[in-house]
Amino acid sequence: MKLTLFALLLCFFAPATQDVPASIYDYKVAALNGNDIDFSAFKGKKILIVNAPWFNNYDPQYKELNELSKKYKDKLVVVGFLSDDFGIPPGAGKTATEYRKKDYDVSFPIAARVGIKGTSRAPIFMWLTEKQYNHFKDSEVKWNFQKYLLNESGELVAVFEPKVKANDPSIIAAIEK
Image 1 (cartoon, rainbow, N blue to C red):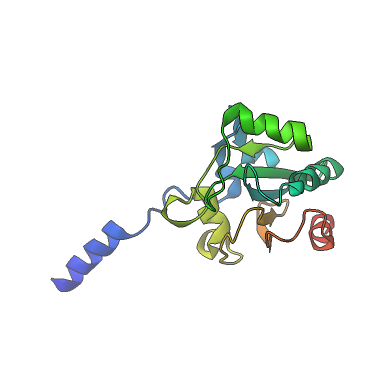
Image 2: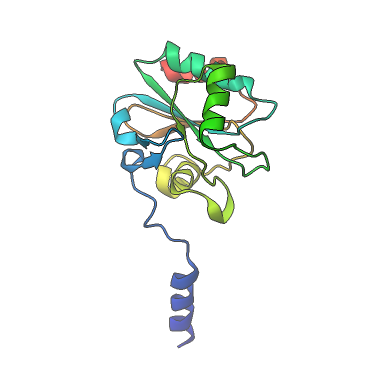
């Protein structure tokens, strides 16, 4: 009886995994511009996913990410995810979009605000940070501008710390590999 009760409680309190698809290509998320970002459209290209704030001292990374996106447009898609999980407000709607375009001329897709840590973590960040889903490694989003690189087959192949800039030789080498 105790074992049965324990099993029931475990099922009740276990995190839901049905929202975490098996493949990155199964994700479709709302974009900041009101459209959808459909990851299945990126098959055959590398994908660099970045959690991004609306404003902080790493903002010049937007320019670097945009330059990377343009330089490798035939083989790489950069996707930013706005988040305020570190206490920095992400802005909203047109304001954030206009800010990015005005100051950094950002042309890569930016998803609407999502949770990236704790119980509010979006399924895509569960997939990116948990080995049971990504089959690469467990990781924790440490701060804004953490980067996740997926290969042309949609497999997670590298995680870059927030302080590693988009034009860092390690990122360039991973993209060109």
